Picture 1 (cartoon, rainbow, N blue to C red):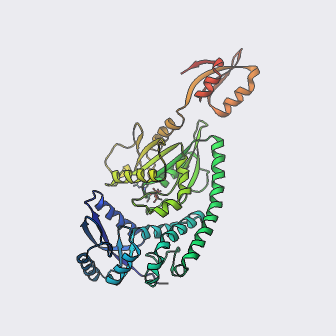
Picture 2: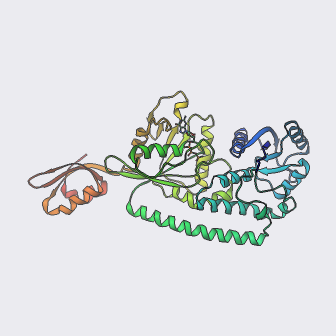
Picture 3: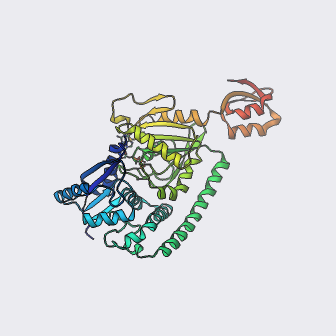
Length: 422
Ligand SMILES: Nc1nc2c(ncn2[C@@H]2O[C@H](COP(=O)(O)OP(=O)(O)OP(=O)(O)O)[C@@H](O)[C@H]2O)c(=O)[nH]1
């Protein structure tokens, strides 16, 4: 089927002079591009309060019509979530399809979802969004085909024909299917906890380079591991959580997880639907907050990520900052300052430095010590060989002498054998 080229006008209302308004419009443009929509014009309005019937004032509607005619646009995208009646009124006046930021993000997620779990999560979010809008949508069914792209494989015309009850039933069925998948993942997570391997989670704004950092670490420390994770220059390339083991040369290891990237105003239904995926982050021992150092909006990206983390209940987890893509700007590379590393994951610069900072955090409850363990306590030597980082073993008259980095708690427990502690 031939794909219609979508040319869009973006519309935003700056309520009470918000300081991040311009940035939020720029982000809307990026989201539209991620959906293969060409942005041909932008209309903005400063308002103390949006109008309940059309969101923007009548004069601005004329501006939108004029721009649409000048650029042959066939789509109008609003920067905020619209009510069903606003969409209906706007479509009647503008005589074209009108969508909002939420639908746009849901659309991108629908296109990107690859695993069964992500597909179910997106579908639930789409149906939840549609539910209160059903009445409004029925009257303009022909136009409101659930998003911008013909590629959208989520809620399409056929689904919109379902009545409210059938949609509710569908949501229940999907949630049940999801529960089973989630239960499986929770079992795996419990197992990991039991194994006592620290979990480190990559978080950050979409496209910051999380997957690239993961691939760089896997390539260096675990090259025989499963396939590389998907890295691509597009928003929300990663929607699913991938987990890789990172074994370090001194027998220590940690698990690294990569998950969905964030963007401002991430739709509420979507965050809710993805909660199970994001739970991985909530249970991490350490977060690596990845930022695109070359992006002029880096401060906003950090704030958006921190706010989203707060929304999903992730607080009080130790965090280090990875200023990625530092090759694209003029700065010292690599460099480490306390909990921050400047690196460039793509050309593989600063990976060791990042691992150094990770180590400092996750293995910081270890102490270096020497123990002299009597020969009749052979099982203790085996224990340390398994649970500590043994640097040297010698056999003395009185017993086995281990020089090692062990858990501080073990050094305390077996204090009677400690002959030297650093
Ligand atoms: N120049 C440069 N480009 C990089 C660097 N790291 C990543 N990139 C590029 O940035 C783009 C995004 O990288 P990803 O690793 O997919 O980003 P992500 O954070 O996983 O993205 P989402 O899945 O959208 O959350 C890709 O085109 C990468 O090749 C870097 O250090 N330098």
